[in-house]
Length: 198
Image (cartoon, rainbow, N blue to C red; front, side, top):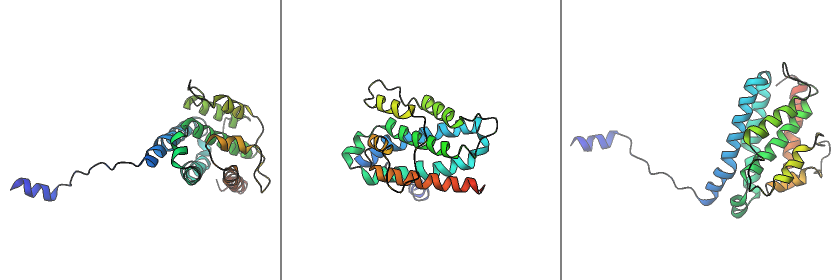
């Protein structure tokens, strides 16, 4: 009697929902790596760049948690998603994040930061996430070359640029899509910064 009563008022145990292959690959190869780099960004910003927290939050919420995963989901088939390297996802996010910071760095210098703060922040992220430390990483040389580039990317043109091709190739997405979203977000942030809205 008591057992019947309790079974009616207590919440029923839910069976865990089995993920499809695509959902599992997305979680492991995009979700977890994104969460790691996001946490490292938060950690570094809270320690050294606290006064730009709203700007960083806006970027992360828009690109890391909306546009980036959407580009990957809409572009990759199941097999590509299965073979996608989480380290490559992190490197793409890191390169585009650093470039956005380089574009705004003439107008935004966090308190007590040096003039090359975007590069220092990016280097710390690279080291903390250990993006280049996997011994079996077949793309490590490409990623190292991409990270070594010191110029900010050209985002003036409407059409896709050559610089985006090797970055997009790391995660199997169309270069034109990655360029469009990076250009759109970076320009929006620069506009907000110039109007002091971030």
